[in-house]
Length: 631
Image (cartoon, rainbow, N blue to C red):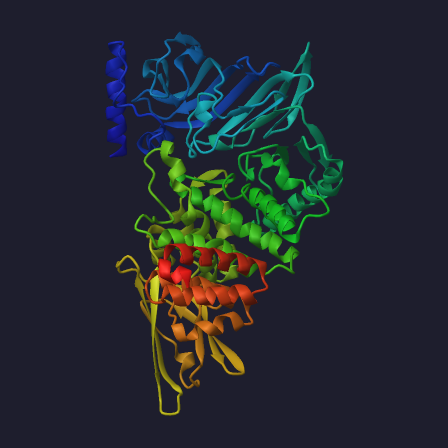
């Protein structure tokens, strides 16, 4: 079907080209999935030779040239390049040594098949670099091309599953530094400018191509067996002296862990980075040339442990992307969440042990659960893995489900498989798809072979469907108040037939003791046999380890006990569960705010105080009547 759609698209283009009137209706702006999937089978062995001549003056344009080599596997249709710029910026096109008419419509350059051959083709395009994603300042610039913005800079096949090699030449003012994903071969002085020539890169997707140029300071260090370099503009000497060694050491710590965990050596030619003032994100995982927000890296002696942990995890996150995203890349941006959840997952593994005084389970819970629930309880919620028809719409994929529910899912997946089986599966995945593209389902097939659990079915519920489970309990006692049965049931909040397979703890509270029961929920109903014969507890705290996902049973009579719980994770999740139960109508808002008020008066943990404060504000202004607020 995709091929037929694409055939119709290009036939229309051909017909219109003969009449010197190009289609404006069938050729879509952006990069459609249909075109991308067809093009990935049509094109191979892509090599971009790019030259950018950067002027000293910000107001001047950047003359550029592309020498593009690629193989055409079959020549039934024209080849379509992506270039989201004005046609006037395309100065000339040569196809296999012959000048060609510029055919540029709906953000695409059309290369007619009569100018192409089966096998290797060479296209030369002189153009003015687009500046939508070329972040230019008076004395520095940097590219940021994720998710589909490479086509705003230069003509390309702007989709993740056409990986290519890059050879870059940059001419820049002589007092500028230049950094890209490969090592410099040589530089030549040309008056007030220097021409830098770089080696050919490893294969990468277009969104990972980058360069940084400008007035930067440069430092190189070799914390282990690989030298790394960093560009930066920070001027605070105290921060520089305090931070530089730590920045390099944290990168090396991350590299060493990942090489061991994945059983795959660092996959690229170098590992450099640039600290950029006002960078849009915390970091971006460009191959061999990671970009960071400068303020995230440079700290001073007064930095708190949480700030240091945040920096450490940012570095571990971006380093993890070298394997998860850069080496193995999603086939299409509907799986963009994969690289993000793996980078966060690995960052936790790498850096949490280095900060033993921080309650990482509590921080994970407060970071992810309220936000995931806030999205997943709504009618507009979406699955972790979504459909994407055009890369123009890739921005719609980012949100609380990807960044907050997906990490919860990943922890459950590791629990279901066991840590060793999960690790072995990841190693096989990396080895199988190195320098290639993969879909989530292909990883799941690998993991499924390593578990007695049906991981494919498990993934379908967690990843391909939205909503969350609502749990209910039924407990019976004998005449001596001993438990005779304990049944836990789950139903999907959206009334579907889904049953989430997941593990979590239940805490029984007694007057002078407590007991933890582990639940391995695999179906809609679960009999907790371990509870049979136990005395009746004064209270039950569900999901006391904050590993499970859903809304758990809660009774108003137990609320006063929550602030007295010694375990701050159990205490914190109980506050979250109270709020969710209140929204579902099982807890009265006035009872909830009384508890939150009590918690604020007794709580010592800063993270929990902030959590309770948010809930108190929400309940007070949204769910209490004017009379209740006055009282």
